[in-house]
Length: 473
Image 1 (cartoon, one colour):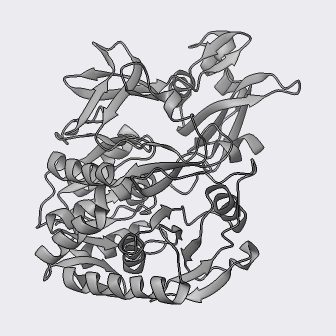
Image 2: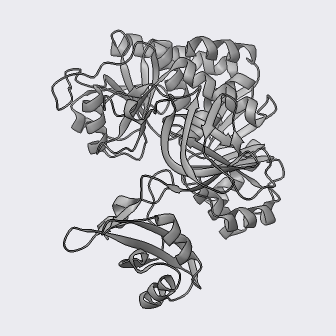
Image 3: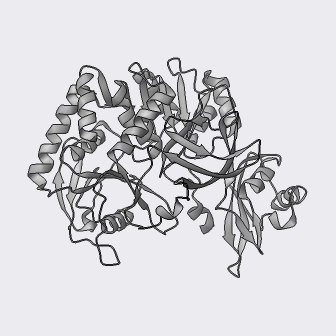
């Protein structure tokens, strides 16, 4: 289904620029030609069988887009993998999901035991041993209607592989375009990895459906790089994680004249960052709320609003609390995944009796817009009492000099849960003073038993705080 949709729309907009990176610009017709050439390589040189499972693990580039479309063209199922993963993590995924081929950058993947081929452009290919099986001795079977697989961190101790139908991928793109006003005159500069839902749902197929153009960057999205790439592309849309906007604010990048919409997601965007970015550039950042398993859910149609995460997009049935009273957020969307390939039954267990996905978030609707208040499944159990990390973090943020905070569950010397906090400050702080500050605002059992003073919060590849790294402290 996706190949037919992409082909139709790229042909319709054949003379318009479809995708660019710092080395190449491809029109719709040129992208189709590149896709077909790569598909020929896949079919001939590698000799894949029916419905091959192909992992894509590389930074953003026009060649990445070409490879993704080529895998679909030959009837394969692309597995979009975070390019920050190590060879060890890739081995786990390849074995767990029984991948047949990896399309990747110049990294050495000889440890996986496959045969390496040259692809096209910057892409390389490693054909894997098809005998790879998960540890339980069986090969997980894809659903017949699955066309794309993506990964999310989960409670199973390994990346969960989400299966998506072609219709779900299409609906995510079409509903995003309709709900956000994306049109043929837009030029989207995307600084989020295409393997991540923020970019995949907002910037890939959605661009081709409307005849807009997608501009991909390379390297870390520093403020200087962001400004240069936006200027080069004359971008009207900016897509990135909160760290990008914080970098721009810190550097004081001048006004971005052509940008009309700036989208943030992946981690909470601080209100002070949003205000500072608006003061600096004249652009109000639009929040976007989505879950990997369900696709894009909300968007801030009124960017003048600082609070909230926007209203539900077309095709989204979202349930939350009302009148300031938070409750668990549940959702049904046209872009929802089908299941976890490598964790049978886990996805299905998160669907309630009404067929809605239980997100694990809590919040409420205010004037139709979603306000997120916390995570219902990340409560810290201290001696039988539940502690909300969001509440503790907000108390710490009111302390003088505190710039950033993450509150999380750790364990004491006896292995019992305790409240831990990582704090970044703009001036010297005393841990005893921070505890006293919390004690004046919170019940004693909510006061962090362990506080780490850091220069920065360690983050994962999409800008979220890395709880694994924090717990190692």
